[in-house]
Length: 280
Image 1 (cartoon, rainbow, N blue to C red):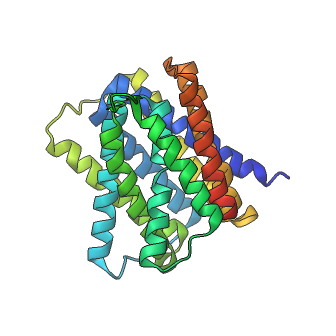
Image 2 (cartoon, rainbow, N blue to C red):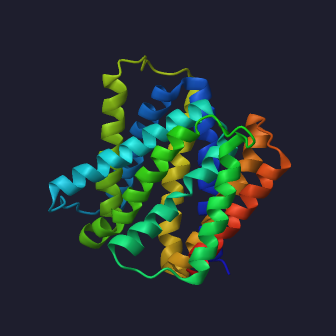
């Protein structure tokens, strides 16, 4: 029974990360939040590598590696831009659509078969995403940030579809080490090249910038443990409930209040995600 605590901790961390991302962007700005957040994340990854005592081999295919980190960084930057414009409680659930991109890669490229439950789950996810994406359904007016979040969805779809090939080649933490540090490097370089103000934020802003990096790092570590003790499918199914946590915390900490039908759409999407991972 205690094994479930690892995956519940993961869901909580990921739910918190979305809210503090929005808060850090609101307070410090997109570029400072992204650049300094990834500096902290790199430091945590390096510390973890020292504690574990791992050796990190370089990927055999450099081109594939570079494509992976550039697409991953593009998805992250689009996420920050989306969160700069829109509501975390709406945009965070929409990022989960990347699982459908992964499913498409699996069926079209890898030849995997689509089960009936996966099809049903896909319909639930797409239908609820459609409702969440529009602020005015009658006039087809999109919520703020949705256009950018589409880049994140497709970028993460690619990134996580091929992430497992790096894990198979390098090992789990080694893949996280190389890919996440690579993504961080691209994100930081982009922020520098944009010539935005990257002066050190006030001390009060660091708590939210650091909270995002810490929760993502801890969540990733807990997820790795959870996969080992209760399996990938059950872990992913429980983590799929993180948008509910985000919606609750966004209301409490950010004052984001949605219409009832939007909250219902989030619940429907979470249901589809749980079905996708648990029975797909």
